[in-house]
Image (cartoon, rainbow, N blue to C red; front, side, top):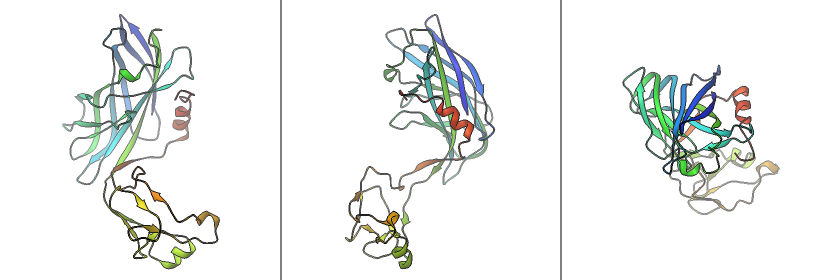
Length: 261
């Protein structure tokens, strides 16, 4: 879902007029969207109010769904000048709960490119929250707020949390190992257990993962090296999209790309 609006400055404060376009795919909705703040004084601030709602939300003892929300701003006179807006690491809050007594939690990743909003406790049903999100104004130096009008876009995507935990990769079938170059544990020739985010070596040594080369070029490699610590192994929790992106949604996102974003 994509929202676009016009940011106007009145008496040194920023106000937002909303123009919204709703999609027919995901059930997520963002409404009553408004920027506010003060970007002219020595102590600057910029934040956004909006209502986020979606259907069939859940949280149980295993996992939960969430809304991933991120923002872009552009200059009034340049429709190709969109720039991502980074949010603060903390301080976001719910202002009003419209449907139930379950409040949201917020999570901001280290890159601050947006935030996840999700149920704070176990529940299943529809949700609708009025929230306030603060932007990190120390990282808005490339955006000029002196011309009084700035256009903005916001994207919201439904996500699902995949819990962390150990799992096996590869195949213990020797035929698949030979014909399809399936991965296997170098010591046992069986499936390889991933039980941490530590680096994984490739080769014949105990504790390594290995494979056989065959005649097909797409299944060949040098059979050496290391999967580094920094490469995600899937042991830690991660999030995936609940629904596929529609062509119209992807087109709308492409329309906010520029050489600055």
